[in-house]
Length: 182
Image 1 (cartoon, one colour):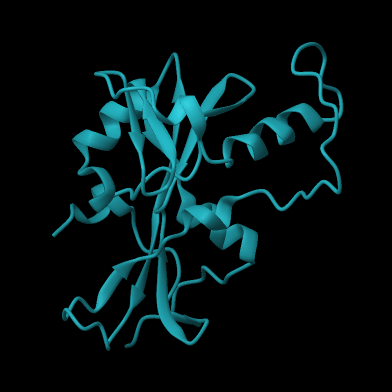
Image 2 (image 1 turned 180 degrees about the vertical axis):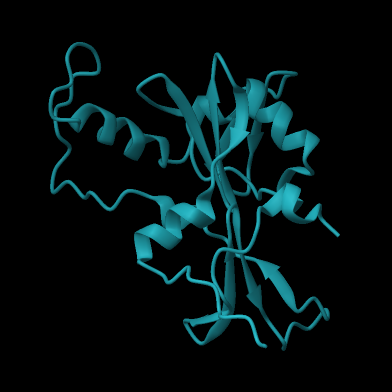
């Protein structure tokens, strides 16, 4: 219904139980079986975006230079962590425009090519709302959404990141197929 393998990739795990729920990972998504859904929608898209949040926690706000040589990666980690912070104050009150939109539900913005992609693919109904602001790693710009992660490079433009594959690797899940029956 939502585009099959073109939208979610192929299945990369068998159905497994996680947190008392049956789930299955696909290259770009996690489907969750919810048999008691009051609306009869028994398969949900997993909100896996929040599982991509870095787990680094600073006991105090570190002084981080944002320019210059970054030998230890602290600048990149700090920039990514800052991207998870909600937009507030005057920045949240900037009027929406053709290139920028504030999403009150998650208190983040979506801008430029990410905004175009998000709107063209069904907005919150497909990717969910943004969980972060844009952040950069090397020459790639990223933004995390409730159910996915987008990247942008000058060569490739905007594309989906394989968050299902990323989490399967992060969690050490088995991706071996079941043997075929005779």
